[in-house]
Length: 343
Image 1: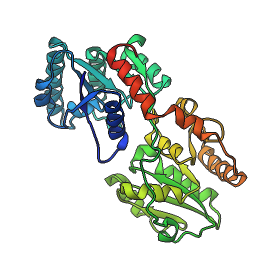
Image 2: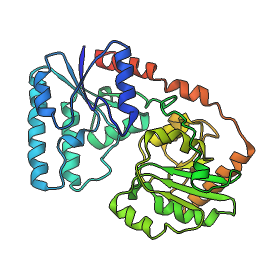
Image 3: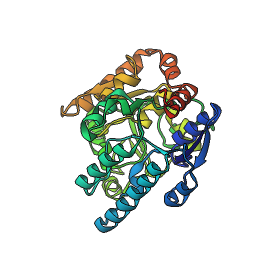
Image 4: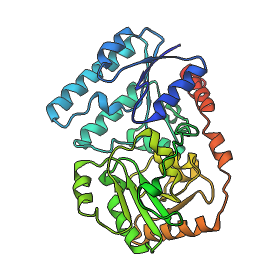
């Protein structure tokens, strides 16, 4: 079996590398359907092969409406070509919609159309499955739930002391926001909540690359007391040392389907603060997450207080059991079964 994967690997997210390696480990031949080469590479696929795409919107989306229409038309032709040649198209739906959508009606039309062309759709939770069925009118039999794998052992410690680097005392209580800093991730709400709960021994680290809007906002808050801003892409070799230096990871996202950042925190056995959502119930157990109601003005603030109290109680949730369910060998076998029609 030959599977044409887009993307096969990524320098920004180890998810694709881990997935590809695990699939190769169960005997799947993974070919690289390289970014920007879709229309050229699918011509090399043969009847019976599989084209597996993760972030489908890259194939058709554009901020210019005319280019959006042209790219969409070409992509539809590509899907027709695949169907005529008996090459199965599979889509892993990571998000119901992309984080940035300019033409919502066109986006919804394309995603509904793509779902019809796909032989199978993979989602990371039952809650996403229900949303896809409702939003894109997809029958349940076409959807397969395969969880997002863990990041155990992926990021290695390199001995960098981030508390020393950021001038944070060793006995301080430290919150961390890690990842791309964009409006939908709720960083403004996080800073406001931190000011409401901070003490002389509490700190907030905000680390990640910001888009232009958030970069302008953060320039106005960079001198705030006990807030450390490291506004850059955090290199992979620094991730483990940074996460190991903090007590609580905070993810005040305004939109959540499946969060790779939350699974990263889970992999490091860190207590997480995030808004209440179905994803929590499917991936975490008691005392691993402090959830809050995002419509409550005091929800995030109170959750951050509760999280530190829990850290001081030194509770020990059963992380091993949860992480075992996210083992990549298991996930690879589940996806192989989907490929072969027995998922």
